[in-house]
Length: 222
Image 1: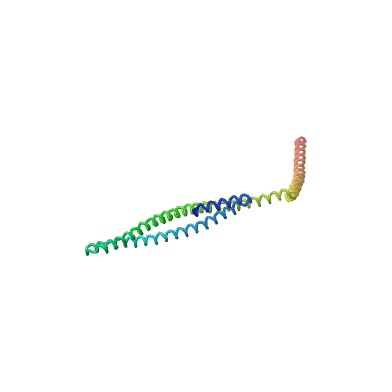
Image 2: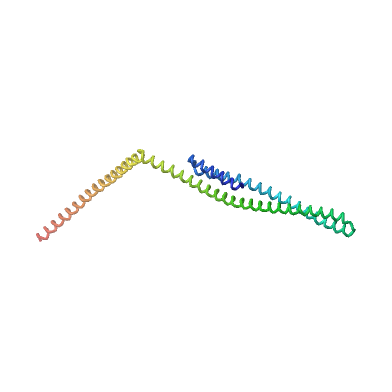
């Protein structure tokens, strides 16, 4: 079972356990992120190990390939010198080196496939990790805003259920009464002024009337 497969099993197990306990989503995502980060470290370490093994095996293959060339040249030299016995020994060494080359070639192919798989798993996990981090940031922001709204609604409900607004209404009624009294005072003042103005107007009319009568008497006498 690969590391990435084990990671999926771990996440699935933790999800089920936390859902059964009704844990909060923020804590759940944080756990998932931690699991992903730990698995990513393990994957990268394993990939680095596979790459190191591939390099080591590649060097061994190159050394064996050099041996094939070396023993082939020795076999040719032995034949030229008429030493078929040495040529046979050289060919045996060449065969052993060729077998080593074939063996190391298979190992290199294996490690190349392993490294490619690790790199693919790392890429997939990094994408999932980035997505989980984004979701966590959004969830945290939503949690903060939800907390603020809950606090505000609680205060509003508390204010509605208290006598604060009743007291405010009483105070407002008192102010309305004071304003009405002030207007009444002004109204009474204005009426008194009107009465005096009326008296002054009546006196002027009477004076004019008396003057008119006096004038008419004079006209009649003449």
